[in-house]
Length: 227
Image 1 (tube, rainbow, N blue to C red):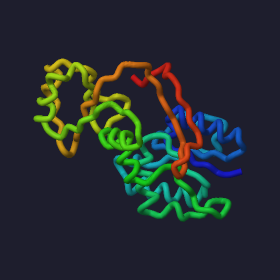
Image 2 (image 1 turned 120 degrees about the vertical axis):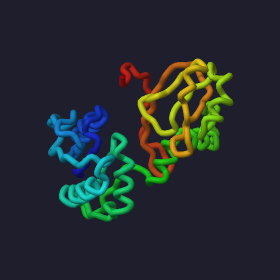
Image 3 (image 1 turned 30 degrees about the vertical axis):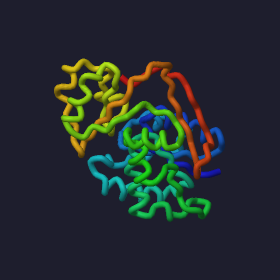
């Protein structure tokens, strides 16, 4: 049996992972910044740990995370939400991955390095990398200034505009009217992308890969959407 720490305990995915890992005989701990996240109430969780909000108090978050890893000694830390960026940063800069777990091995963060995370979440870079791997992502153009938006206004009916850094389709413009682009002003610090609009069935994918090998994969049609 191993101890596993799941972060982002507010997420339904965290609850699902807690149940699955507990059913496999692991001792599950959960962590988040909220006082009453969803997974805290689960009988499959041995203990819930509250952490400072990383986006507001990154140093305090890293300190608390270090204390938590040292006390719980999990074999793995599994992120489920955007806290993965702060976890990767903390593990790399504070050396948490060198902390011995209950079995004597270092605690392992189930996530790539910060640099890899940043590139994978950059919608323009992700499309470029997918194409380099032989995939066929939508044609994607990075927009870093107002002139780039104006140049595409006449083609807007066949495009999707979205921030390079965004989630849950926040601020996305699908086949916008030219007038809807008037307030769109990307910058090098806050770039957007314009992508070809593709019609088809909406599918979600979740995968776990290790050293280039896919270990688990689920592809499903979403029934419910955030918002």
